[in-house]
Image 1 (spheres, each protein chain N blue to C red):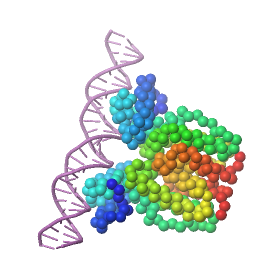
Image 2: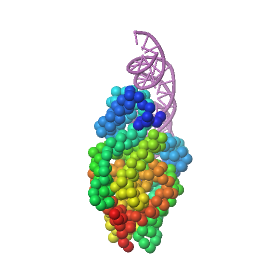
Image 3: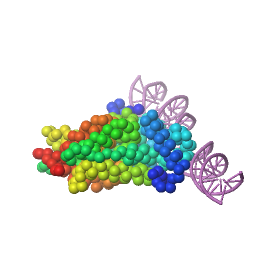
Image 4: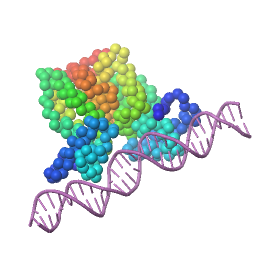
Length: 188
Length: 188
DNA sequence: TTCTAGATTGGACAGGTGTCCAGTCAGGTG
DNA sequence: CACCTGACTGGACACCTGTCCAATCTAGAA
């Protein structure tokens, strides 16, 4: 079943979905992504498990959807005069937001590795959104390879954060240096 | 239960472990990591599920262990005269090996995100081994931030490979460019 | 107000994970 | 050769994931 921010949900269904999303986020913060089960989310949302599975293709889909909403609700304009500062403002901002929702960040990384079609869709959107932010910071004439390098480094940081090798707070600081290294020798 | 390349296995136990590992790899290539179950691995190894769980803390642990062996069995010296070429020879070599075992590569990324203590141990070892290879290619006086940047970019590529956003063959080519960008302006 | 499409539900289902334990078997020791 | 330690086994366990469907609500149309 594919689902969420798709057109064709009536008011009642939309309400159900919102309750599930809110419950999912609460449950995630409360017990973490390993202990979370679709059935407890359904219960918290005041909905039957069967209904939850009407809108959620899988646990991974829930996490991906929550992360997508988390990312989409966040408007951020790159700040700073130099390109390096602008890119750093983006990575630092993202890292700060992740640090505010570490359970979500930890949940989404493995979730996006899933094979469900619904995850696939969101994965592409999330990836595109991140690349878009880096491109916006780098400017329209940016070397595509530089964009890709920054995106890869950020993905890598996400992975290492998910592994617990660094906190999401450290992530911001480390990426500052990493971005500086990548951009060294890239004008504007 | 912690386990594998630990001292304290007698010949019989070591033999059982080897059979499990070989069966795990076969099963992984045969059905992929999503369909693989510990019980089918046990069956393929000619061992009971209970025995399998004596040596394997979890499915994730199996994947992590297989990947660690895959990495450790591989001796590779960086080649080339310049630093860039040396680093590229490492990333290209790793990408080539991953391309030869895509199921394993796809399995290990989510596996390393697990929380089991056995996964934790292997995660640190695998991370250290990769960093060591980059450091060896970069030379003893390398800027630590450059090492980290290369490592992050590689992790990111692993993640994107695991997501199916790129094949492991493409990974080699893309990392060539990425490494060149990172190293631009870094002497020796 | 009644009807009805369709949202929701309860509950069963097949299959997987990881745990546990009492019982069996095999190989090195005496 | 009989013994005994410890590896291995069978099978039950609790709990999870996702799927399915017949039965039941419920809100808006007629």
